[in-house]
Image (cartoon, helix red, strand yellow):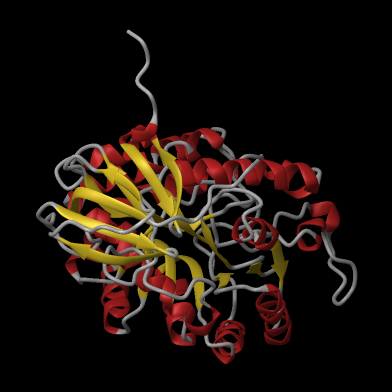
Length: 429
């Protein structure tokens, strides 16, 4: 498939949501050149050879960012992802990556899975897809969230045979500070922009009750030290107050989920200036687990905490990121924008869109020198990376517009136009 090329582009007569302000600009013009936003002006802009897009007063905004995504674990079931053919799984993930971009998501933070090859293929232009901030394999303990081994694979031989999920880079088991250091360094060696640990139990794994704490303080500290030696950070999957507090004590910079925490722990997160990466998990995700299954029982414990956790995040002004955490469901992945729109339960449209653009980008910047895409993301400003959406409608008035990708009439990433329905010839009546 021939890839779109980077061009000089002028957006004329657009109202800008810059990713930071709660209001739109006056009618403006935007010049994109060499993958960057070169100029923003209320006056006309001329540039020889530029592609001119008449925005007709529509809204130009930053590309959306999903801060909790699993690029390799969406199209397939858990068994297929672990024991299925690796070639097929990569092709399925590549097709899903193209769909993700066409939903207006120009950047994702991958928080667990063998996404390095997919990221490389996207960056080289072999396939279409979003920018990927990869964590590599999620690091877990024996029986922890992310340990998808079956009981017949036990006991584990320390320093011996690796399980299938470890061989393919989906998850790595580490049961001591030294093992943690090795597994963290392996992910960094492969190009991880941040490190993902599972500090407590989870929903989707078969042997990890949500109430348990997994890694010890010493193990978590080893991961943080190894990551910080590379100038980056650890993000920790943690639902309970105990798991969150231990993670913060170890120096973890981002907490994923947190839906079972108490108010004192929310205060601690705010005091320590730790990021809280939340997901307004859709009810369809909970109902997707069979009635009576371990996963369904865990989901039934977690889901009632989603709303209260958002309220705590607002009450204590916690730095909050937004993501989806879709797993093993192409149908749910297609609801990515609708999951963002569901933030209206707690936030204004502007607050939600700021979270999914400039706030998420601020969190991504914690990767420091390991940032694979240095530059300003999630904003429309001079010098920013040109990841842009032209929206037919005003999403600051109607957040539901982001739920339907048809409302994005132009999708640009890195100055490349991947979609432009304004160029389409009208059909005959």
